Every structure is written in structure tokens, then in C-alpha cells.
Length: 477
Image (cartoon, rainbow, N blue to C red; front, side, top):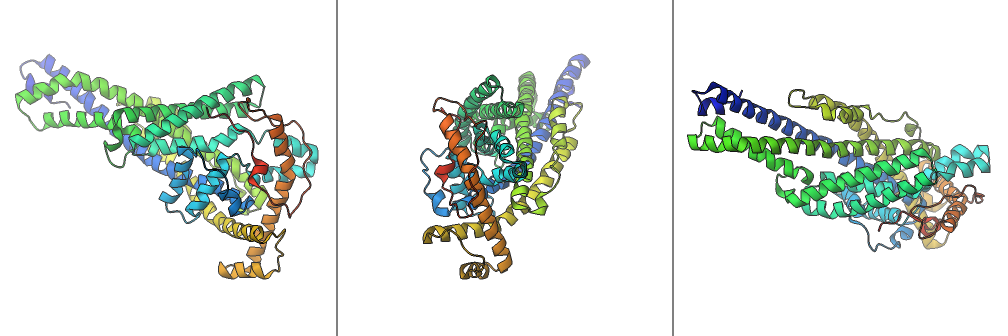
């Protein structure tokens, strides 16, 4: 219960009660403030880790399709900070699943519009038995430039919402603001052309998240909040400044300060109540973006799993989608959390259950895929250097690879077969990408997938080049 009124006005019960109530409300707001900030930090750290694994998997997929030299030769001019930061996260987490160079090259490939061959390969495996028309139809809605931007938006937003640097927040917010604008333009175009509602919804949601995250970054930069408190996200900096001010006032009251100090605290109560209330609204707004990003990450992974299973036949990937029910509950209940009805702890536990469940699985997936990726990269680089069309399963080279990596020859032969499968898929898909490029002009805000295209002939000796699979993307300016 508040004390300031009783100490300042012992002979005026009405005025004393009024001040005590204000102090009590400020203390409750401060407690809720702290709960939300701590919950944000906890969920933000797990989301950041999950996002880093997801980015690692995406980078690895390109190395399954291309030789190392193909990727390192890609132009790296104007590499966006949000793309670079995604690769940096792989390094900062000290993951064994990727070398830093592999990660950065993979992201360069994404930025250059290289299509996700293993993902498309899964679609190919599911539709091929139904004939070429089914294949063309199945691919038609999959390679959209909206989805090509998804990784950059998602990774950049997660990085901004968890970075401690207000300078970085300012830099990232500018880029995400541009991406949000172009995604908004894409949404309008998709609606006008009557594209699938799922594509319209994806573009709209990404635009909203990118815009909201950029706004949070701008607020952090204006407040210069990067040094407000070590270990906290820069976007929480303004909230932390309010927490410090409130804590000082409450401490002055409870430490039995002089009459003059108490009068000074009394004069600040109304202002701090207003600022604290505004800050709580701001925290909830930013928290909503973080929770949406966590949900977007899990849904993106759920979307990848069936395609990767179809392409790799790894039984572990043949599983039910991961739930986002706990995250949804937090999103739906966030506005209902008040100083008199604080459910933060329960909502956080439910959201973390979703994230931890999927994070544990994706970390194992990334580590198992890293071995496949590394061996395939070695084989393809060996082929490129020696101008080979294939590496026979009984070759001395594969035996040497098995010995050097402490693997059985059977496992290396399995990886070599997968390498051929990816080459076949690339040869089948190449005409599709050629049609996309031919039908999309530089003035189009998004790529135009063809209604129908004749697939190429499956060729296990086909050598994909990044330029073969570049598709036009949303204009970034």
C-alpha cells in the first residue's frame, strides 16, 4: 500500500488516500512494466536462436545445389545490413553447423534471387507422378518474389528487436521501412491480379511486421537507448528509462526521505503515471511484433518440413507441424494483461513451450543437415575444379572423402546420390525460371510465374549455376 500520502498529510485522510492510491498504482504499473520487459527479453533470446538456425538451414540448401565457387563469385555489392546481420548471428551463436563463409555466401545467393531448389524439389516429388501438367501447376504459386523477401524481412526484424545497439536499430529500421513499403506495393498488386489469398496474406503480414519493427527501431534510435541497460533490446530502452525514474521516486518514498524530497516525489507522480501508462502501451505494441515474428519463424519452418522430407526422405522430417498455440494465446491475451490482471507468467510459459519444442528439433535438424551439406559441397567443388560431370559411387575420391570425414562409404554414397537428385531437379526446374524471367519486366513489383511451362529433362550430370535460377524480386526502392 502507498505511503507517501500518509507521511505528507497525516492530518488530511482524503488527500493522504488520494496520494497513496497514486503511489500504489505507480508501483503496480512498475511491476507489470518489469514483468513485460523480462518476458520480452526471455522470448526474444529464444526467437533469435531459432531464427539463426532457420537462416542456417536456408543457407545450407544453396550449398546442396551449387559448388562453393559458384556462390563466392556472386556479386556482393549493396549487401543489406539485415542480410549481413543474419549471417553474423550464425557466427555469434558459435554454431558448428556452418562455417561463417558458407553462411554469408548462402545469404548472398538468397539476395541474388537464387531459387530454393530443395524446396522446389519436394514439390516436384509430390506432383511428378501426376504428370507434367500437375508439376507445372504445383510450381506455379511457389516461386513468388514475396517469399524471396521473407527471409530478409524475418531475419532483419528479429535482429532489430533483439539488438542492444541503438545505432544498429536506426540502420535496420531504415532498411525494413523500405522493404515494408515494397511489400505493401506487392500486396496491392497481388490483390489486383487475384492471386491466391495465402500469398496476399503473407505479403500483408510481412509488410505489417516490417513496418512495426522499423517504427520500434526508430524510437530506440531517437531515445539513444542502446546503453540504457546492458543485455536488453534497444527497442526497450525508452521503457527502461521510465523504469529508472519510477524506481527512484518509489525508493525516495520508502527510504523515508526528507519532507522536501517527498514533496518533490509528489510533484512527479502524475507525470510518471502518464509516462508509465504510455510506456506499457509501447511495450505491448513491440512485444506483439516479437511474438508475430516467433510465429512467422515456426510457420516458415513448418512449411519447409514436408518439402524437405519429400526431397531428402529423412524420416525425422516426416512429422506433424509445430504448434503456435501458446504464442497465439499470448497474442490474444496481451491487451488483457493489466495491473490488476497480470497473466504474463502463464502466457510466457505457453509461448516458450512452442519455441523450445521447435528450437530443439531445428537445432538437431541443422546439425544433421550440416554433414550432408558439407559432403555435397566437397563433391561438387571437386567436380567443378576437375570439370567432371559425375563422381561414380565406387570412385577412390568418395572413399577418400569417407575416410577424411570419419564416415562410412555407404553414407557418403547416399549423399552423392542426393547430390545427383538435386542436379536432376535443377535441370527439370530451369525452364520454369527462364519463363519467369522472360515474363517479368523491370517495372513489375513482383515476379510473374507462368501458368504453364514444360519441365526440363531430368539430368543427373546437370551443373546448376546461380544465374540460371535468378528471378526478379520486389523492387527495394
